Image (cartoon, rainbow, N blue to C red):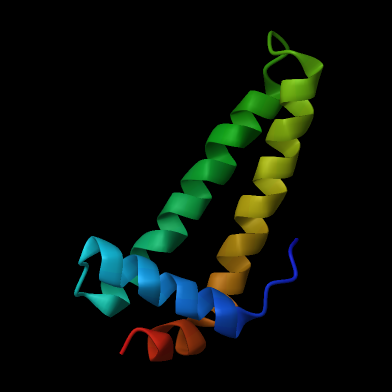
Length: 86
């Protein structure tokens, strides 16, 4: 799902943290995981909603895959992400 090296993503995360002023680095990482799970859950519900346009349903399927893969990427690379935030 994307080919941006984790080191570059970690740098961008630091830029976002610095820009928005969040000083609790570990908490920032911990907060990202439930958000990704929430996105996956909401989009899974959209994917099952037959009242939505089929294009939106396919988009929901893609959003579920992205959110689940992104959560896994965060879990696998927690140490790298935290190191970029110090």
